[in-house]
Image 1 (cartoon, one colour):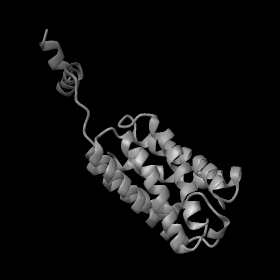
Image 2 (cartoon, helix red, strand yellow; image 1 turned 120 degrees about the vertical axis):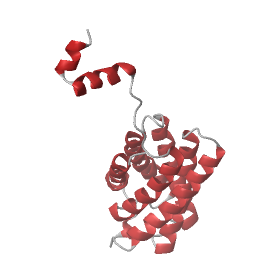
Image 3 (tube, one colour; image 1 turned 180 degrees about the vertical axis):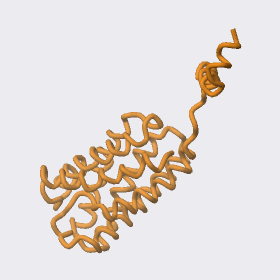
Length: 196
């Protein structure tokens, strides 16, 4: 997994949250939190899928959408849509775990990976909301997703977990035809003429 591919995926959080706020408004009840969560989850899932493909299928987007919609609604029901630091942390934990569960299954790498990813995403989203709650001044507006400060923290934490799940970036295998062509280029034109 390349950090250069994963790091830009953090943009899905502030852009998804902004679009959800524009389309749905404040997430102040379970129904509005579900709808806003689904909008934000679609953008977050798409940004992550673009970074992770071909390691995950396009189903990643769907499970992110559903997970954030269900997680957002459940979090709104549990917290009463409160926007205190504690309530936002609980929101992050619940919504993150819901998204992480779906995504963990979408990895198709067994139950251990699904559990690891669920815990990682839940904990990192809890941290993401906590960080953002100390940066933004209008958390009471009922945003569906945390902002850039929290998104960067989440992206770094999940990036570390992805390195464990997917492994470091590997070089692509070289085919014999490519290897021969590179050898001819390296040896120069005189070597090509003597090989006839």
